[in-house]
Length: 295
Image 1 (cartoon, one colour):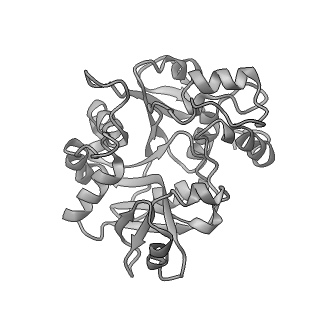
Image 2 (cartoon, helix red, strand yellow):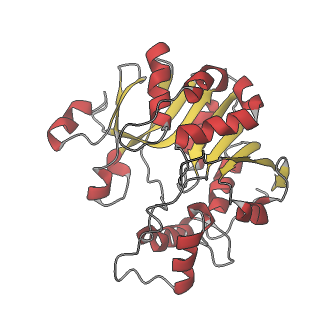
Image 3 (cartoon, helix red, strand yellow):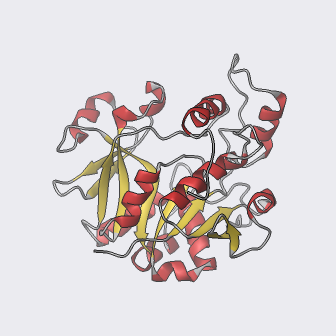
């Protein structure tokens, strides 16, 4: 049996560009909600009646899945995270978890951060112990289930990711069609990430159980094996960012078959744009009426 992974990196330093766009009409957001969506990192938008943000729920499931060392990647202006989760740079105690902050600095000449691979690279540079162990990395604006996080923590594979059943995600079909599909071999190992496949191509990517699988950007990595690919990640030619899937596929070119897709069929609440705020709040009221941190 492999050792349970206890370190987890939460990516929370992005620019939240889509969240800052004006909402579509009729979404019924209050002035306070619109102001928060425009000014805060997505995961710090208030989603509970007691004024707590989305990140609470993300961290709650992380704790329930058995993680103890949490590294939150924030932007240079991420001080609000410290108001919620501890004012020290490292080793804040938050409900029994050890919580540290890595800062994703923006290179000179850029306005926005340099992408998810750069975020993770800056985190492992600031906390090099991550390169000596395995760790899970996830977004801050997706609520991954305890089951999903546990599957990754307990995986015996050097690298793993949750291969979500596309049909189980309850997003509008237009949004789902923009998700990249993942291609798995007969052993369940990742062989390709297919961005924006056409409707004609989609059928070619069903797995052995007939499902279309997508990644929601939650991965387990072997820190030592992944490090050089984060460090040397090329810039995406169109989006002008260093993206985690690019680093991942470069790593797999040299270490074939080491990234296993763990199949799961469930929805993943997502706080991407203003249209999502009400839906996420309704979901949390139903499934997380109270966060009992001591269980």
